[in-house]
Image (cartoon, rainbow over all chains, first blue to last red; front, side, top):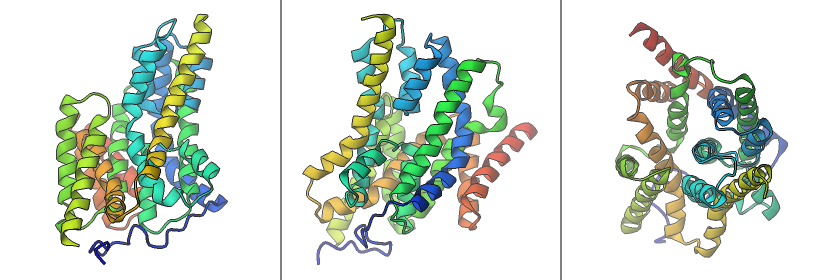
Length: 245
Length: 100
């Protein structure tokens, strides 16, 4: 058996079942609710900026509801005009959201066990936070794929309603730093890392991922550092196991 | 194309492009043989991607993010609930910002 990675953590293919239940949806929704609530500050900020960029309320809601990807929507506002440049917007959106490709790849072994339509519906709700949450839960033994949709819907509701509120209320909401809302996101992602911790001896690929991401962040636009760092760390880890297996 | 129409089309194009990035990786993996290397790579991918998201965030904007990260991870390791860990850490930073 040259295939078996020598490690204690559950094997990536160990009972690769996939279910999709109401319970899983509710679990995901509950787990993502705190983040959805704190994320409202970010979505309100988006609504305020969308209004300043000249986007009508209806379009702001349409964009949040259908695109559902904060960073790319913020970037789009910079490019907005009465007649928005469609090709430029498409390219900017792709450059920022292409990190989803890596995340979707990681979901393949789990979500390919679902009916194709269910998988494609679920992926519509995939964003950084609930993807990280679902992968962390999967590593702990979760097999219910509806957890991604439940958490995605919670985030989606906060994102769409916050954007609408921001557009209606406008600025004058104060500095979110007073409530430390700006540290919720890094703290959340750090929390999602804890079940994935491979042990100190196997942590060096994380150092590679972190180092490469930080370096790439200074030179690359958008979220390319996530792809470059993530690929560097994970490929190095997989390569190292191939040599020792 | 009227301005209003172009706005709606632009938004729907953004939505389509974004959805394609969401399903793109899922589709691409059909082409990749699910051998040992790919399985190990996918196993290590989540941790590496999340650390690549977090690391630059931790180094930006002062001490708030690193303190929140350290507090969250510490409380998570002490087996507090995820909710307590997250909000405890955020509250800690909020209080420290008032004090300092």
